[in-house]
Image (cartoon, rainbow, N blue to C red):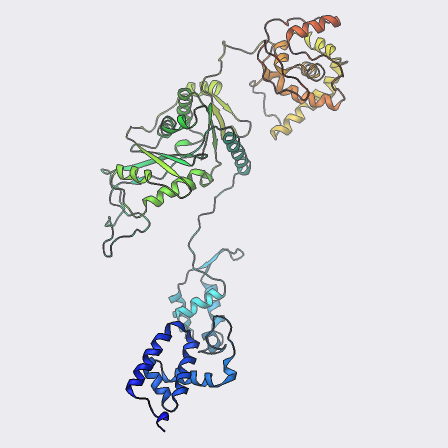
Length: 578
């Protein structure tokens, strides 16, 4: 009968030691059933003895004993469950009908945003909802409110800075052009740099976002207000990010953030790193936004860049991002974000602290950064005269065909000015007919009037996207349709280059190559194609000899041949320049 009585104290202590060893290896259900098997083994009084030895309640031990003794209760539960479905206290929404509907009504009343847009949010906190649910007669804690909201698709979120404001109609086209230019420069081994100014930072014991590891109870102490301190001053970092090399360069200025300061930062990068990294470069591509010190409408920015181009001997190509898209500039998410991470939770007490923090910026992707201090003064309000801008526009700046205010190149040496290399007077009036006879193009005047002049304005209107506003009087020399068609026929049938044709006609290369290329397409569509066995004329001497053999007089073709600028046509052989 002793086996049905409570066990002795020594035996209970031994049982407690055994249970303590097994507890870490069992989940809730395994622990409960194990306690029940021990209680069943002890018999009468075993439930109380096991409860004392394990610290569990007698209810838990009794439930485990019943589960161990009942074969039907030994069914395998789904993974992750220690109890059968339906066990435990019912949810508040099940015990109180109408609770979920009442919560949905409160959320609808506190919803903000466009009702037909997925972007909506609630201005009510969990505790506000708990109090309002209590006022409606429902017992519903804030944890239950949070669970029900999660089940209905609500979540706690911050704001995302993704809206770009107004969308410029040429935004995507400019992005594609920038991408193509970056790929072209990179493939050619020429430098591509992304430039921009970082937000000004106040020096001194001011709070900065972020957290850092420090001894408990010893936070970094900063001012409780962020009122600016004129004595300590601010810094204005301007960054230059080398896209291909994944290297950053930051000039930390202490004066005004002007275009002169921005260009000087680029100059210091070129002198310190760029020239040695790209020793054979003859051009450089700058990508930047359209505002700030590198604004697309800034006169001082273009003036300073022209000086840099002349000093470095580089063609400086600038491509601006459309307004409102500055965050797409590489420097924003490749360099500046990492500098902000390096500066987090540490006040910038001095200029040297700021420079050291930037220089310490590095990433696992291989980014390294150089930082220099620029203590020079850069006054605001510097004006560039109209005469200087006229000189730059006429002789230094080369505007792109698409959005010239965003895409332009500054030349290292000015183009020849008036009186130095002016546009030649133009071709001899009898020359087009002679060239047409050489190429075997009959009825030149009728062909020009029918196929060329009639569609000219229509083609130009399609190209510019609007009808002509007025004749500006600028640009390349406009040649008569007969002259253009005769030159195009010589290009097709005699293989004459645009360079040679420009020399024969007495005009600049672009004056004949641009309209002549369209005329070639027109004539080929009319059946004017190269003739088998026809001579290929590449020099003025060969032209004069061929004309003499045919009995055709060509006046004014004298002088030495000039350097060829053409792209050879299919089937052409390399030509020799005299």
